[in-house]
Length: 313
Ligand code: NAD
Ligand code: AKB
Image (cartoon, rainbow, N blue to C red):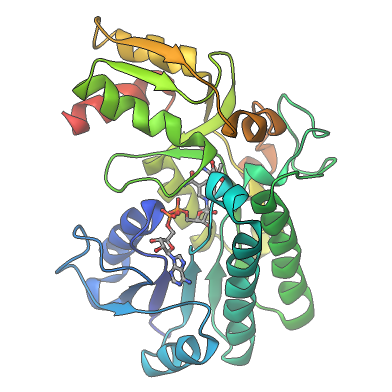
């Protein structure tokens, strides 16, 4: 059996840091090359190889993949929903061209597998709000959502046309404490912990009753690795899988935090991100992922809040 060598693109980001560390535990430090446009995240230093790289530079990406004998790529570099609305052209350019560069090289170099995350942002105001199904009306209204939906179909295209084994998850908003979030609409659910511990109060940029699908990072890493380890014959979705674990509103997470920090108070000052949140479903149905490759989450709101506060303290 050929030993896999992995390249993580966007390794210094919120997901990249934790995914790189998890992959290094599984495959060995030297077998996972971290790369990013920005400097190496301090948590990655000394844990394995790092290269500074721009995914938009296709030649450099190609050279690195050949030079390092890469067989799998996890492509995480993207501009997220809130930042994307500030510069739609740039978000479209990075989110699309970066993915096309990876898919084209994966095809040319016959890479074993590619991972690329999509998002619940593919759904729009016309999608069902509750238990949004795997297949449904999908009319995204943010540039981020449009780029993710188009990306899903590029993945499907490269799988069907060239046999590139590319796999994908539609992550909900991800909550974590190791690495800072990168400009999403769901970032309030991370900021709230830091402010609760430091200031004992938080002003949410989303209204108190805005429910969104969310997931704790350990579950997101578990889902990613389980999908990538699954037998190819069990992968029936080559666009991107819905995955879900919890759904809550700013008010609900505030109340859960107050169980641990009784003096914590919240107020609400919705900004431009409210429109983005209002366009997304409140919960998603991930029964296809559960049936195909046995997906099961571990963290609900209560367990996640306890773990976040314990680690941030
Ligand atoms: P992030 O912004 O924290 O990290 C992205 C990383 O990509 C950053 O370190 C950035 O420096 C790097 N990057 C940007 N441009 C680059 C380029 N041209 N070349 C190389 N690296 C570049 O984002 P994240 O939250 O870790 O998200 C990773 C992926 O997961 C993205 O595709 C995102 O859309 C998706 N996703 C994230 C969430 C979430 O809640 N975090 C939810 C759904 C989907
Ligand atoms: C964002 O809010 O942009 C991300 C996402 C749900 O894709 N967290």
